Length: 129
Image (cartoon, rainbow, N blue to C red; front, top):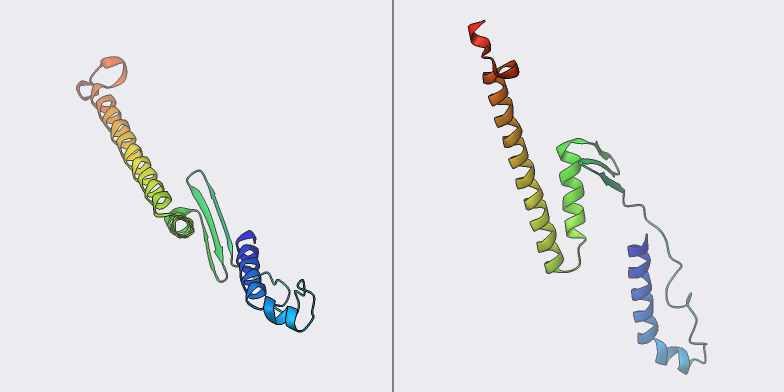
């Protein structure tokens, strides 16, 4: 909502500055808002939520709850809303680092599980039982 209000206000101020001379020439007060633009109208664009590794994505008739589709939809919209290329690059770098860390963690867990499976319980090999 704040983004929509900011765009509306910027457009309104631009029109007021462009039409200031005409307002003064017609002896209208310079603060006539309704003569320049109409009132602000809110448009619901959808809802996004991201908590941990779960995302909820609601955009009109498209609804995703959890899973990769919701996560990537949230990330792509969040990334596109960033203002500068520097912020986008840092955000992308953070996501890559998190992905690599998760993959390394999963490889470590798998390696520990494989060692536990072969060594058995308390170091005994289970294949000889």
